[in-house]
Image (cartoon, rainbow, N blue to C red; front, top):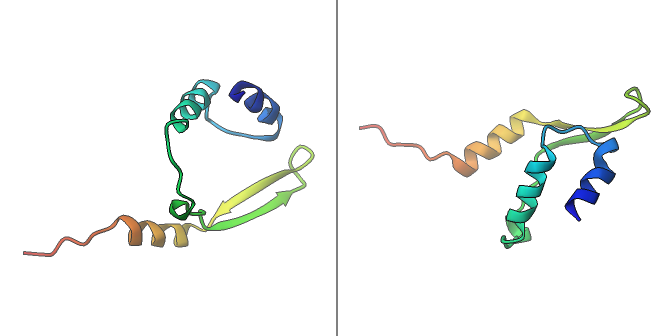
Length: 81
């Protein structure tokens, strides 16, 4: 199923994830439980770029908002001595 999905999407995507990686990740995901409340959406904006080979959807990450989220989520200040 992953192979057919990957092949069907191939003409519409640009990625550095290989079929081998997709197969591995798909297999790993079968053993995971996803809690929708744990999912986040990377801040940014999607738009359609008509000027690229007949069109494509591009996602521009809001880097400042993403960095702020990373700091709030993962950063823990170490008290000075």
